Image (cartoon, rainbow, N blue to C red):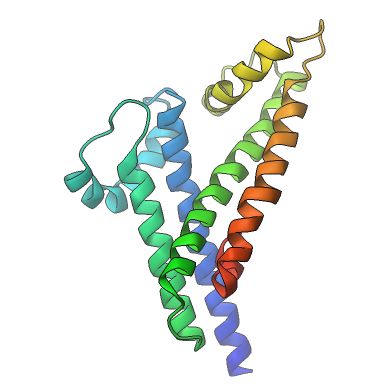
Length: 197
């Protein structure tokens, strides 16, 4: 019974860490896609993640161009520390350093792909029910997915009312998730079990 409660506690900690990692990667992607910084949702994400990101900004500096390296480094370190702590508490001891690093990278990639996956679903639903929605959340979703949709739209332009680009992007996300992230998770050994939500 005690071990079951312990396992449930570790699972809960891992889930909470992954949710925070999700928010960090959302912050990273909002910056990368040049989404509206003053959007209330962007501001909330920055406020929630800033305490963790601030120490990394002090030595990695402010955002340079599109890519916020401090947020990326913060996500990597938080996941790495969480993996080490969970493995120690669960009694597995210290995993090899390369497995830990691969697991943390896989977790970042997994979070980024999940954000794009959910954002695309929201974008598709919005395009059906409220194509000209002015809600801050709707605007942010459109700004977030545009950088990955625009190159596909250049190759496959919309056919009248039908836009096939989301389907192509969904397939690409699934392939990257299955091949790249899947390979990283397998390469990470036992650490791989702690990668995703």
